[in-house]
Amino acid sequence: MHEFELQEIFRKTFSAKAVQVTEENMSVVAEWCGGTVRYPSNSDGKVRRIDLPAPGAPSTAKRAYVGYWIVFSSDKMDFRSYHDSTYRAIFETREQKAHRENLTEPEIHARNEKLLQIISEVMVKQDTATYHGDGTTGMSDVAAKAVYEISKLFI
Image (cartoon, rainbow, N blue to C red; front, side):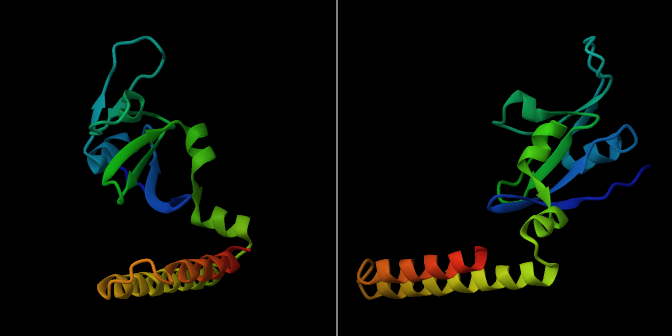
């Protein structure tokens, strides 16, 4: 049985796990995602594919041929399939993101920790205000300050 390596990838506001389907890893990837290897009878040249368990997803997101990427989102707890060109247009690896942002791994980690701290502080202030019956009083100033602090992290 062949092994495969999952990459951590990012799409705007969430990260996910992904693996590209190859002839060599198709069976083990299908097992990982709960899919089934199928041998379609059509004549489009695609010999094998993985049919994914993706309730409610468009049918194209339920099939992965060799060269496609299967992405697992822990936020949505589901698997989706992407053609290679679509995948590359939407997702980037941690290394690609760091290169694009010209940041080192420790710098990205520090920024993410600061972002989490800012958001946590705003949530505590909102919870406290709501508890005391002041759900909106002064919260626009708190939100404005948070937006300013967050924007400094990305500029």
